[in-house]
Image (cartoon, rainbow, N blue to C red; front, side, top):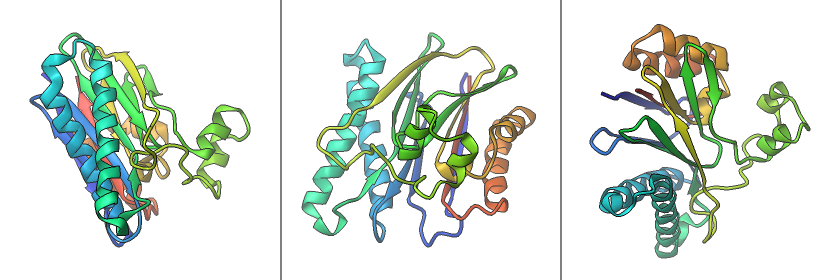
Length: 237
């Protein structure tokens, strides 16, 4: 049986533009980090998750390929966010990251991803980042142009190269990964990993219950000086 918990706090920001969702019935889990003036980022992240969840639920029986279903769910989310901005032009320019996991009954996780939120696999062997950051700094890092330490303080670390709701077509990464008994998948926005090291994240997750780990991770990020919204979803297989 899969165990999961999630938490989101706004930090020092005026509003929380992050969203998350845990659907135990369909075994789908989301985090999204919205962007846009006023409350537009919060609207974008909420619409994207609701649409992707609904598309997945409505079409689950029609797709044998769950990786494709995850990708199409996120494509539907992209369309709905863009449609909203066409009706409410004051939200033009809003968008959101999205990291979406479906756990099947055969020991596999299907991870759909756009933006710079992250999915990690955590177990007694270590912690592995399963997603690539679709950001300017992420590309520099992958190309060897900067170090991980440089990335944390880079002045353009928040510049996204891809996001949900910013263009009619969006490239969606989908990763399929085997998940063994006791493995955990952590979904989080950049408010966590910019403030808490991978080693500390892994230590907290392995030393605590799922719910306590989520609470401690968020509080640790905020107590470390984090001003950004912090959102975490932890899934234990």
